[in-house]
Length: 97
Image (cartoon, rainbow, N blue to C red; front, side, top):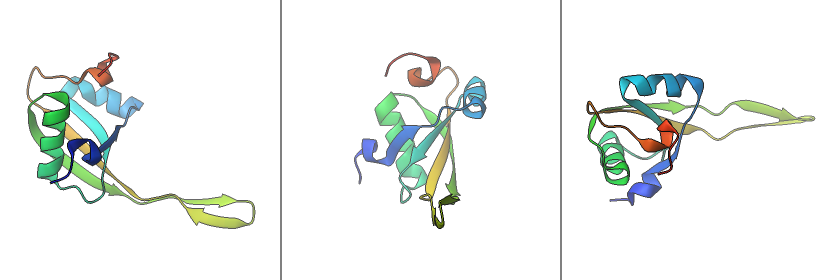
């Protein structure tokens, strides 16, 4: 089993993810090899909250150009985690974790 801090790479803070915090849904960039049960355990251990649901999606890297040459950004995995009623994650609420 991986260290929970290796599974959760970073939180994704955008307008869309910030709007979902009202529904107790939080968005994270996670390790591409992580499974839903591993993501659930990692969020519960790191933030000391209860998780009811985990949705994941693989994001394909975008094609980018620099001058004449072109390349691709790295592909990554996104997880949307739904918490139990009443639980919050402070880093999304403006506090320090």
